[in-house]
Image: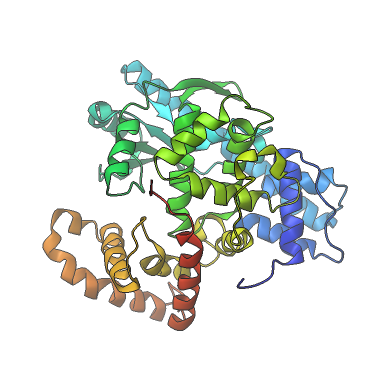
Length: 408
């Protein structure tokens, strides 16, 4: 293990679990710095649940700190409402033009929480079928500001500072038979969607099977690039509470596990669940499907999640660069092959022109490192210790290698 979990992190986990899931948790450690606890809640994007949990556990925050995070919680609630209004507007446009859709991530995950207000929403994600994608792009372009329109996976739009992503597929699909099978699921996602309601807003969202696949894909993709933070871990916990626990879905959870196994995601799901059950409040007995699962990496995974923060924002430069070493995509390649392949992926996102003109790849190998050094010199990026970065990346890869992601 790289380090021990701090008492402030323990306190945060217990506050947030109490607030987000209403679970009975152990008391927080003595002499905890509550300022650090709540600052970490912001890094992990769980401010609302941590603030609520502290209140429910009878922990009094100092008045100035209490007021600060009361305002932050109110701001999050207002932002969530604006996103729901934007989502409703986008849906209305699609329905008016008879385009089937499904809301993915965002609101479709919030509905699984006991109190959806405890989840911070980031943006609006909507997926349509490939045959309707270009038409939907045209409609959104006429009604929203266009931010990015590569069309490879999704396009980005904005209104009043809020982002909406229009998808035709998902990021993170492996380039193998499993990836092609998953692509087929997303091709039919709108046909298998179900009606959901959140705070008076009605919308279509994926069924339980597809929601689980999307959560695992999305979590793995961000975990192996920047980081996921507690918000993403809690999203899977909320899904598991509703669909994968014997208590709440006794007759259906095994069918979902077979789906995950089919696509090489079951071991990753077990690692996440083992990690979740290492947190006070969650009981392994509620999840018999991990009763025979033994992993020494659950605490290492939890610490890695805490180290990264929401989308890796705690250490953005270190986590982004280490993607070149970390990301495995289910292939047992040595570190140099992995670095070369992953650098190509970084080049695709950093220099979109290489997607259209592959001849530019040699230029990318020179341009991207020079651009990084320039940003360090001008203060736009922080310098990363290459020795520490490589060591950290190798440790992270050791954790992720245990997932056997996308392997039958």
